[in-house]
Length: 457
Image (cartoon, rainbow, N blue to C red):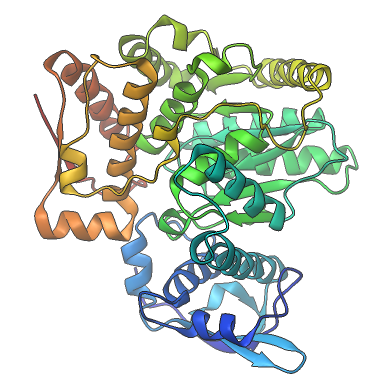
């Protein structure tokens, strides 16, 4: 990456958090392990660096190694002092308003998570109920809950490294969802996270629809590699990947999955593992796998891997629809109507799915390092939702080794992660991962991929 132009300036937050205590300001400035400065700096840089085609958080941090952000306490509120910020976040010296809004969202979530989730012991993070309660409060504090709206929020998952044809297809699906009054939630980055939002944005404009929602949900470890795309108008930073995944399925009313790599496979395994829990058997939750005709082989491989590892019961939870944007939008609309009827019958909230039972294995944060990756139980002599949880962790570790700073640094120091799997599982796992590499789904086009993992029987 070439040396970028920098801008240093001072701005006011936009609409999320204008007042902080002196103690909060001090912790935001604190560069020690007890402070919030490092998380704030990383997330702020990701917001300011939006629109760049980079999926390596280390590269972003190295390019802008001299970037800094400081919170300044004033009588009338706070100001943010930015030093050597990316110039493309500004127009004629003024910060783009959408970026300023998202930057304020980062400040809001970093402060709330630190104060209410991590430091004060308000939530029991050793229990499933306590974690779900924490997820709810983070989302509520961010203004995500919309009690007056009927269910219409479609979560779209898929890769950041996809072909132009796949991107255009995701945009077409988003367009037809938008024509049918659907809002969009994604991981907020490029590729299949941007396409549905962009398509829906055009459709909402045609329908003269106001107050449309383009919700992005991220977390500090991934946001630098997947900076929010320009369509995102609501952003939430969850503390870790597990709470991010729970947030998706608690607030979403249906999920569409486009082609992707290990990150998308991680999301699929999380979702199916949760739905396979016996207590979730009767809860409607529409799931559609879709892509253009050229993606048919991708979904065939995913479907075969699911059948081998999780069984036919898992396959009943989703439909595969190839090259049919209109059909996908109609099917999702019909599925969400079923969700609406179910929640009305059971007097459940429209804005947060309390009824879903999420096993503790899917909520406990997994820290990928060489020991934890090598120790994963990758065999079929366990309950299917437990196998799904461990496969999800394996893919999460590969994502970390590919794009997250902590994982990339660990690979640089100690070599690839080792995954130990039973011999029967080794071949399908290897074939799936190899297909992701061959199809260029591990890194952005033009980037040579060096595997961050080895498989051992």
